[in-house]
Image 1 (cartoon, one colour):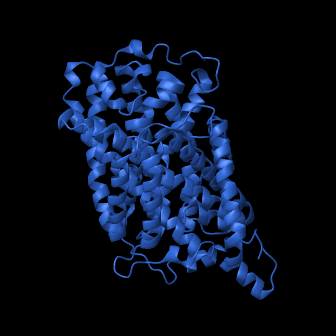
Image 2 (cartoon, helix red, strand yellow):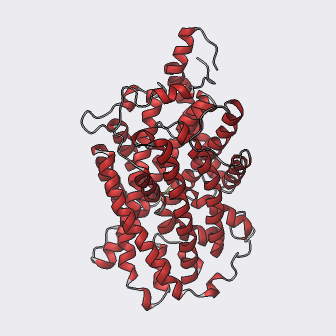
Image 3 (cartoon, helix red, strand yellow):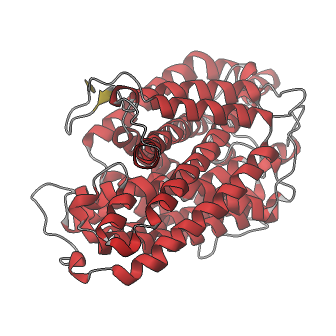
Amino acid sequence: MGIWSKKSLTRLQNEDGEGHELHRTLNGLQLTLLGIGAIIGAGIFVVTGTAAAQHAGPAIVLSFILAGMGCLFAGLCYAEFASMIPVAGSAYTYGYATLGELVAWIIGWDLMLEYLFASSAVAVGWSGYLTAFLRDYAGWELPAALANAPLGTTPGSLVPHATGALINLPAVLLVGVLTALLVVGIHESARVNNLIVFVKVAIVLLVIVFGAFHVEREHWTPFIPPNTGRFGEFGWSGVLAGAGVIFFAYIGFDAVSTAAQETRNPSKDLPTGILGSLIVCTVLYVLMAAVMTGLAPYQTLDVAEPVYVAISEGGPALQWLRPIVGVGAIAGLASVVLVMLMGQPRIFFAMSRDGLLPPFFGRIHPRYRTPYVSTLITGGVAMVVAGLFPIGLLGHLVSIGTLFAFVVVCAGILVLRYKRPELPRPFRTPFVPVVPILGILVCTALMLGLGTETWIRLILWLALGLVIYFGYGRKHSRVGREEAAAGTEPR
């Protein structure tokens, strides 16, 4: 049973739904909306302010462009893989086909970090907006001990410290409700997401259009604040660090690929959903970041509700937007959590089908035809994480996990183009090898900007994953067992 064993593309295509048929109900538009639902959320409503205040200043606009470029290169590679291998599993499945079982496991374990912590991080951001909205417009002040993380972080320290809070209860309740919705069905979840997407995109456009008339250009001066002497705090290193911090907000197009086995025409619809959602959201992110830093000094945006602050600084003429933004943020962040919680169980589903995780992770509900056991496990873990940890720690972990997965996907395209150039590709990544190499370089550079503590946490997480792989996954691998039974050498 070799750690470098690969699954052939023919096998991947033939086992599409093998004994575990999921409902194929999604089209290209729904996939695009799923991607937008995952992307437009914490990046605009929460992390933009933090990244501007702590890293890039008004140049957070450049950070979004840099992150968007990395996503575009990776997205083009994702689109080729998704059209060739339209099965559940995202980068995990692509890695299994090109780089071998061990690399596939590492990616799958890394994607757990990405999706589990992303749903938790955005739920924490949602809690902040809900608490502020209830305080301002319902007169109900939720006790701080029940609306904040009991564990916090200190720069340079790996060990969280107690904050005095008990639990972030709103975040926990949101994850619980959305987990139940996902068990009921992907089609019903997509309908809810579509409605929310239209609402929050309309609200984002309202802020951009009306806020643009009240921008004060002096807030953009200096556009790139001088470096404070520490890496990642303003200057060009701050632009790089800011791009790394906000990168987790872009993982929505990765979530699109996890729904491959629930897509009607995956070879056509998956590239449409991936690239369409990425392009739309990058434009909106850049415009929103410019307006926010033009309405308010960037130093004031390091709060849980930076859009509120920006609107307040914009003067009386914009105050009618505050309750609308509150509703948009509450609905918009909820849809991000929904899509993140949808993506992780489908990674579990694919890994269980391959024998790398126990069979119960792949169980399909007899009525709803959803991977309900892995959905419940995902929701349960996400509830615990959202209730205990702050968004800063979670966001950094999600960013580095996402970037690592993107690097592997770009490398996989290079490998497959070299080893299997004859394979049919409904969508072809243009300008190979330039695009994959640029994707690898940009994503690696953004990883380097995330700080030593985040790298150490990633290494510890991957080390735990390797223990589980060699303790369980390698022994139960379907591909490995078949090779051992046939007496073949690992491919």
